[in-house]
Structure formats: structure tokens, C-alpha cells
Amino acid sequence: MAKKRFIAGATCPSCKEGDTLRWWQEHHVEVVECVKCGHTDRRSPTTSEADVPVEPARDAQVIGIFKPE
Image 1 (tube, rainbow, N blue to C red):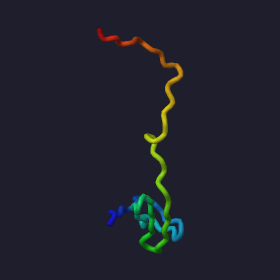
Image 2: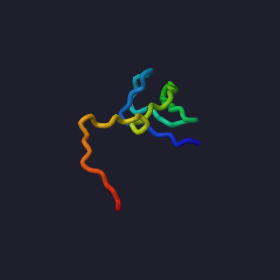
Image 3: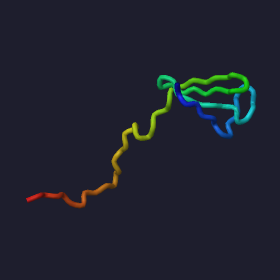
Image 4: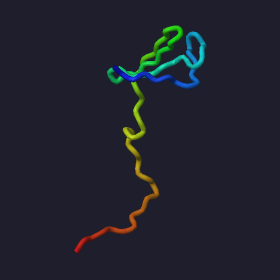
């Protein structure tokens, strides 16, 4: 079973109560649930910045090339 964590300071979009939302992951899907009214929201996690290819710097210059003898 997944570990469920409360989201500090979050407000439920349905009942407008604060500090009642908890979050966990099920089969690579993020689940947010209100413990007061039972409202749930499911969504796929967003891609992290590490998954996005990084463009090389346009002004990068080669300082030198190492040639072992």
C-alpha cells in the first residue's frame, strides 16, 4: 500500500476546507483526496526537468582539445 501524505496549507476545491487533502501514487498516477468530503482528483505526474533535453549554450566555445600522447 502506498504511503499517503497530507498537503500542508492546501484547500479542497470542493468543500473549501483547509489542511484536509492527502496525496499518494497508485500505478504511476497521482491521487489527491479530501478526508472531509471525499473529493478525489487523479492525474499523471508531470515530466521532470531531467527528462527534458537541454539545449547547448549558443555562445559556448571550445577552450582546447586533450590529445594523450
